[in-house]
Image (tube, rainbow, N blue to C red; front, side):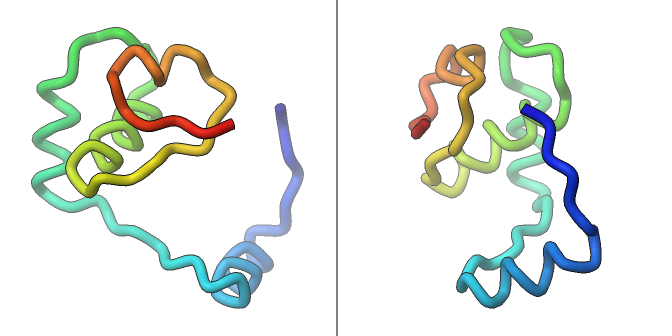
Length: 74
């Protein structure tokens, strides 16, 4: 699924929705490097690492993400 969005609008909508942004922290980056190579997309691997480290759920239709044992909602 591809979405076209105005990059100037994203922060405004995110903030208005009460959603916080999340920086890439050292612990998550190191964890991403230790993940098994089940998914080829490095950005998705970082999302998985952040979800594991911070106890979060990933909202995605990507079935490969579930292979990491992280909570997924779609």
